[in-house]
Image (cartoon, rainbow, N blue to C red; front, side, top):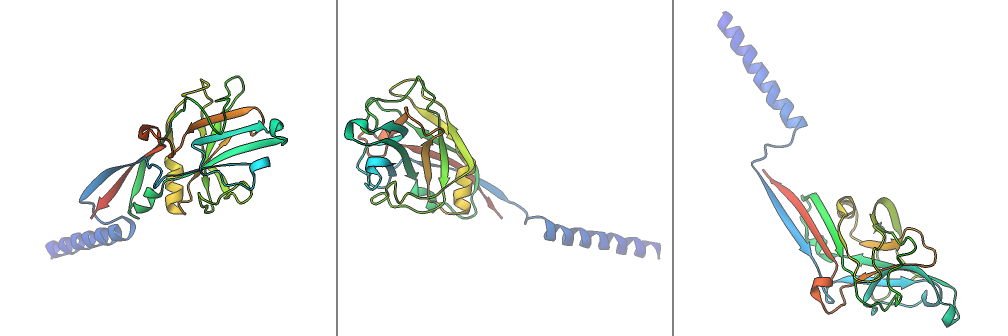
Length: 229
C-alpha cells in the first residue's frame, strides 16, 4: 500500500511540472541560428535624400550626392537660414523573418573630400554633433521636400559624434540596435540625420548611396538570431 501511494505522488508531481512548463515557458529549443545581414545599397536600391528649409523648402533634392545635416545661411542667394536634414532607408530590412531577434545593428557613414550640399565642409570650431532618429511616417525619395517631410520620434535616438576634421570624417559602427528593433516592430520608414542643435553655422556631411565609390555607400550591419524548435 505504501508503494502505491508513493508512485501516485511522483506521477502527480511529474504531470504538474510538465503542464506548468508548457504554460509559462517556450517550447524546447533544439537549435539557434545566428545570421549577419550586411546592407550597403547603391543608387538602384539605396534611399538617401537631402531636404532643406527656406529657399529650397519646396524642392526635391534627391539628385544631391551628399548626406548632410546642418544649418547655414542663404544670404548670398537672397534667402535666410536653411536647415538641412537627410532621410535614409535600408529597404533590405523588409526581407528579414518575423521571428528574428536582433542581437546588434551598426550603422556606418563615410566622409567625403568635397561637398555639394555644404561646400564649406564639416564645421569643427562649433559643435556639429548630430542625431540619428527613427521616422514614423513614409516618404518617397523622388518627391520628399522640407514642406512634406516625414515625422520622426526621439525615442532611442543615437548620437553622432562631432566631426574632428573638415573633410573625410567617418562615423563608424554607430549602435542603432534599438532603433532597428523598433522599426522592425513598427514600420520600416527609415532614419533621419539631423543636427542636435539646428543653428548656424553647423554642418556635417557624408557620402550617400549616389557616389561612385561603393565603399563609401552607407552601410548597415545587422546580427540576428532565430530559434529552431
